[in-house]
Length: 457
Ligand SMILES: Nc1ncnc2c1ncn2[C@@H]1O[C@H](COP(=O)(O)OP(=O)(O)O)[C@@H](O)[C@H]1O
Ligand SMILES: O=P(O)(O)O[C@H]1O[C@H](CO)[C@@H](O[C@H]2O[C@H](CO)[C@@H](O)[C@H](O)[C@H]2O)[C@H](O)[C@H]1O
Image (cartoon, rainbow, N blue to C red):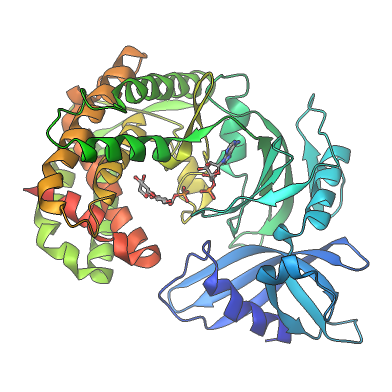
């Protein structure tokens, strides 16, 4: 490995967006290096291949390079290290350029101009992208890195790269004009080799309108839960900060987006054979999760029965493009209503898998899991856990009903009438969450484990 690759091998595993946590790194290779700006500092876009025992993945790193000691102190937190670089006679400080407003401003310039080369910068036709805006990296638990420009745009830099057009750009473009999404304004792409070596146009980043008046759905729901915990004897609907009205409107917004996607993009109806295959995939995911998180084992029988029941469902299952990783952190409440964000799907899955048609009930299940999370997470480490646990269940049930009613009234199927399908999707998502928490937030592992225990009892 070069000196830079050695540095990346220590820096990448410490990043929130690194998907291979828990396994050692065997090798790091800079697979492609695209110069964006030359001079001091220099901006390069790297595609970095990380090899681990059971996983090879590619990541995007925006690399700032400046003379050793030449980095302003406000960028100290973004430093990757000091190393020799080919073609340069002295050692350089390299850093995560997403944090450098001077360099990220140039990305916006390129998108506005529509630059061509090994990287392609594009503005959405008809969109006039404003430049000269100061940028700031959003802090938060994210799978990617989002840079906000002057509270006007947000540039989402996709960290884990899979060859193909990212569904976030694809679906936001299909939904453009809907009041329930934030309009896309541009993107950056390159060609990335697939397994057979074919060059596939691949989205590297997406520029979208920044919704400055927005409040995160997770924050709103968590506040409502906190209010109820302060008045544990009250029914959820009577306590201050009741979330049910919002949950119902969110259900309707979700149904409207699903209808829009079903109208403008391909749909299908699944055969019973396809249902069996989906159930088998759920079982495989369960097996993998049990191997990594043995605490899941006592519930594997109940989970398996739910997947088997799904495989036996007689009714045809309509499928279409869906959100794919739907939860309260993916929706924001603006002055005018709910807006859905992050149509990327599960960032750990290849693009063709994420583009596969699925039941919209999978998204419904994702959001219902999120209500359960919102209700439970403040129990972790809470001295009054025993007393508050039934309150949490009450909150989740109350808002679940409201969301499902909103979904049905908004033109979606009535989720309550498709219990077998819904339950299997909820279990499958909970199994995914068990792995996600074990790898990323071990102190939260008990949230999905406790809800699996409750669902399975
Ligand atoms: N267009 C936007 N307007 C306002 N806030 C946004 C916007 N896009 C993202 N955010 C904020 O950033 C967070 C993370 O964005 P998201 O697209 O979910 O990224 P990731 O895929 O990295 O999780 C969201 O939960 C939201 O709070
Ligand atoms: O980064 P993404 O938003 O694409 O999604 C990943 O991270 C989420 C956590 O931030 C994770 O969601 C899980 O935790 C949420 C609370 O933080 C909860 O509302 C969700 O229901 C729960 O699944 C998501 O699963 C993961 O893909």
